[in-house]
Length: 405
Image (cartoon, rainbow, N blue to C red; front, side, top):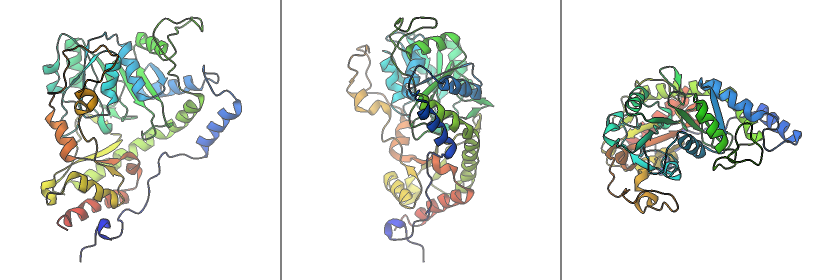
């Protein structure tokens, strides 16, 4: 007799939890030291912010790093510092967190959505040039789930059309493309340290770049428009206080010491889980072999085909997977351009041209991912053991065998 599914009264298959963040006394000690110093705020009284920035820049192989309050602001600072002007167009994917597109609006520019590749969910280079107009100024490729974009193709297109490339690396701390750290390939790379991210202090963001002019401008923008060698109450640009605290910097420096080993463990588990699922009809893990030399697996994503599961909806399958103890999610419910913000053009005070209209945008691959096929396993689960990966695969096969109930 087949074992019952958890939702039918059976035992949960995955009984362990996967805590995140990972920390120990060393993390507590560095926070305690900051607290005891009494130097909690900014400017960088203890030098901890600059220390972390230099450590992370070196880790990425970049010359400069600028920290800030979150990953969304990191993208915004990089885009503004790249020299865009109101009305300029910026190419973005529709399958990503909404901030990748809304920061473009905050810079008074126009997001132009280009569809994703069906086997990676990353921006499809073959569709980029058709979207380029005389107003296009930048491309923001997202290394979605930690899988490297096809950066050779994207950079070639950017050079051909004189475009800036800003890597959204919010999922990609420690990831590599052909041996280069993600974030270090384009004009700038932006990271998030929000609580779910592979490197976290609860919140925070950072931009890496080799461009000294971009670095200086971002440094000013995150510091209320101040400039190098200027006075404290001397403001040259429309900036704001986007600085992080000593506490965040100290914690991030400590967490950074674990990042490489954690990334390699997620990468190994992702490869192993791929092999476990390769013969499961109706389940197709997103593919590798596109230039990534280290995948961060901020998300382990597979494509679900309900026709092989007796017509079970993606939502129902996701609920059953979670009930069995697999930390998972069914992903974005719709592409960014279908959000009310874009459909109703609720852009408020931003100078978006009247011709802009998202009501007829169609990106079929992204839509299919949202509505029908994308299932995410969360990054902290990818820090488990090989036995855990076997259990994840077992759960999927268990659901498949019982899909007719």
